[in-house]
Amino acid sequence: MTATMSSAEPAGAAAIRPSHAIYCDLSADVPYQYYRGTIVSSIGRVVCTTAPDVMQTTVIIWRYDGGGRYTAIAHKTSNQVASDLYVIAQVGCDYNRAFPMHTQVKFTAFHGNWWSDEVNSQTVTMYC
Image (cartoon, rainbow, N blue to C red; front, side, top):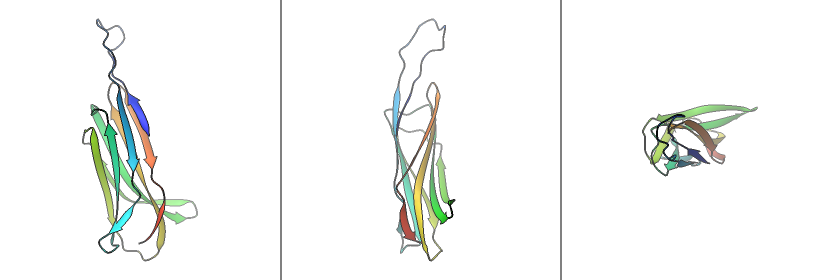
């Protein structure tokens, strides 16, 4: 997903400055297991042409429980402002059955105006 945030002088300002657009791309990796399958982890990434003034990035790992019901089994939120940011969510795995899982990345930023977007990874099935 790509979005644009612009910063411009307020209406009626004495001097009009050109807007400064920032473009951001979001990506969500599929969840993966490590440490002998006992930990589920996933990475969300935000890459912007330059850092916005304020930003918040949240990575959520969702487990599909069947019947149209999803459970957020892990989430991590970062308020770090950067032009290239990785956020990792992880959770211990103590179930012993197959679950479909996917990663969601939610992003909100400010640079002259507020903007928010989200992206989801593909779904993978893991024994957890």
